[in-house]
Image (tube, rainbow, N blue to C red):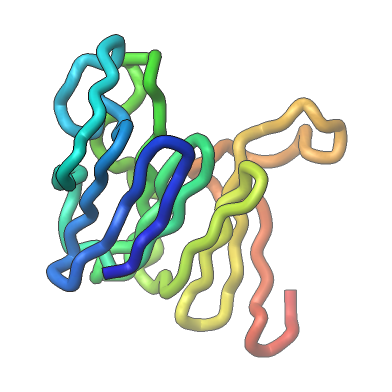
Length: 146
């Protein structure tokens, strides 16, 4: 099992490819009402299956399936319109690692391509960035070429 924690809840990935959460798990992830948060003292199974890696940030959980596809699951405690099922990012099926930092999601592909996925920010330097489901930049870290 690989653990991760976020303010208020914990998530683990078991050896069977399932994600489990406990604590203040976002209600939409477990079929609950977003207006009525619930604390889980024992782990509850989160949406999806066949996961191989994941990373959490303040606003989403990003994960890779065993087939190499990349997915995100938004975190919301107040907005019932937020997706309760994982959302696919791109069409590639060769992702091997995922990491999140300061609102950006980074994914590494088997061929060495490192990509960053972002939401548009108010920061002037990021006004031309693509929406979350699109790659904002990529570089091959294995051969040093962009």
